[in-house]
Length: 443
Image (cartoon, rainbow, N blue to C red):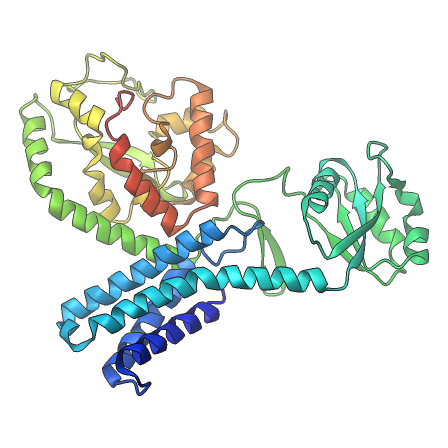
């Protein structure tokens, strides 16, 4: 991801703030170090917010939210560093305030201005005459996109289909002559992957033509998590189930998890001790309940919870989910489950790197074995670390999953989270979590 425009905007904003405060641009060494530190942090944080990730449709609100979230983290990091080094008095608060405001405005306005400029340039660019070849759903999808994309630089001059279901389409047998006799710039081929023989036929028709040929992969049929193209040693790869989290983004998420869990344990330690005492006095048995669940990449981890049930035995390989009025649940356990406070020990799972603050909730191994063959792409939820809270939880998909439909809906939300992940999305989920912690289905 190219962060040069954003970093240039931050540097320009710092200079403007300095001039407005001191009426000169002769930066003192301390201010120069502060600006460079901010640029270094921003070069890591801003890409990790997902604001620079390519999107099919530009959304000013989405980009603005993520840019401002990233800049807020940068500002927080700078203030924290200055406080730890005890150098806050060495810098003008007015200058820093100007820099924060100017940078926020530049980060929001910049992408929007670039989008307007790109749209205008595209509108005045010479139009490419396009021929579309295909069949089935891939062809219909591309036609819909072409028809709904205003100001496109492509002019669709003909459609060639292998079936009779497309009104006005020509037969593929006419393709070679049409391209030879008309001024065609591009040929797009939209064919299902299972129709490889049709692709060979089309390429044979075009073997003597000087046109740009593009094959549009049938991603809709094989849609999993994140489709993009990568390369290794000259070999192209189409990624079907990778996540949009790259190295910088994973580092930032991990840092937020570790710091967040550490702060959570520190500030909630009195509550943790009170609950532990309550669980201990509720009956014989350990304070903590440990259950094996799948973590990142399907690795088996032990998830911690405060014990909420009386000691009992269960048939091996079968898990019985708690239900309203379940006699196995202790009195304090019922309260802990309703408030979700029984899950607080998972802060230690997050601190040890086994879980994340936000992610798909980990299921017992028995539930995974039950649903992995029933729900398509079920195990893809383990492409990221499981979380203490998640996108499905803040949408009310908690508690019992006694039907396949309820579990399928939860998985749909989990996969959407992985596909659309960003630091801003994590912050949003964390902010919404306290308001859904008390839930009658969270048993």
